[in-house]
Amino acid sequence: MDLITKERNRLLYRSARLIGLIGIGLAAVELSLPGILPLTTLLYALLGLAAAAAALVRAASKTSLWWFVGYIAAGLAVLVLIATPVGGDASPARSIALTTLAAGGIAPSALVLLQSMRGIVLLFPTAAATIIFVGIAGLPSNRISTSGLIALGWLLSALAGYWLASSVPRAVRRIYSIGRAHRAERAASEVEAQRRQSARLLHDTVLATLTLLAHSGVGVNAQALRQQAGDDARLLRQLRLGATPTPQASGQYNLEATQDSPLGHTLESVKQRFGRMGLEVSWHGRGQVLLPSDVLDSFLLALAECLENVRRHSGVGEAHVTITDDETMVRAMITDSGVGFDVAEIGDGRLGFRDSVVGRLKEVGGNARVFSSPGAGTTVVLEVPRG
Image (tube, rainbow, N blue to C red):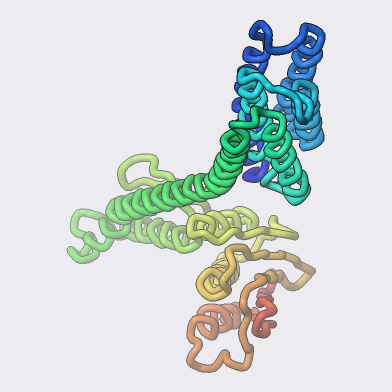
């Protein structure tokens, strides 16, 4: 049973408990008026009403249909106890008490009984029994009005149960839609903040270097200019792989030596990058393999292009990447359970895969293979030499 159903049932049971206890209490007060019932019958009736109230409270706390059946049985037993025998006389006060108990004390059970097939099976005979029995046992002159009031009580309880049961899922869906809108707005804010950070980062580094080059490096010696251009090149490479270098001061950023970049660290950067774009990437296998800088660059960029294809074309929000290696090769297997495609359709016009994946890996001695079919997902295997 899902959370929505549990919350709906809890609301219905508590509503039935509140209305039912009010009806039982009113019936107890009416029956306790002097001259309505003999003392012995009154004591039995009050004990029966107390048992019905206790079963109703227990049913609401446990959301248990069986306790609810006990509450209905106790209420019907009190009705039988206090009713005037068929053909006898009935006082107006006793007739009112019977109507109150049937319409206000037992009829609220329709809120709960209407929500399941077993409850519906119990609902109709119970409602019919109260309407017919109290109508016959009441005052002969008021039988039609008494039966009508009890029928109205059952009808209103059933309508209230239907309205509450249908309102809870609608309210939950609206809450979920508000949550989705909030998450979308937050994601847009994070993207905008990232864009501003990237703009500041490029302004502090690459654009400053390009400005110096445009002015022939006036005021800066050649060695310092080469060092600054090299730092900018490493920064751009890390940005392409999804990293977010942290500024130390204006124009200075924490940069790692690309020659010694472990595969696991850079894979995490790629994972975070696609996570921000809505694609959940699950990594499996090895992650601490060292690769030469140029091989690592090509490997990760080809991997990122495959994940971008998953994000854009697969129709799913999750991809799995498995990293394995042996003495000569490092492999990545990118798998998704999306719509798939016909591999024969990858022709010369598919520059994204041909150049960004296959061509890039071939430049460093690697290779790429694709396995897919319509409706069966896609698997891409990337291979690069260890060094």
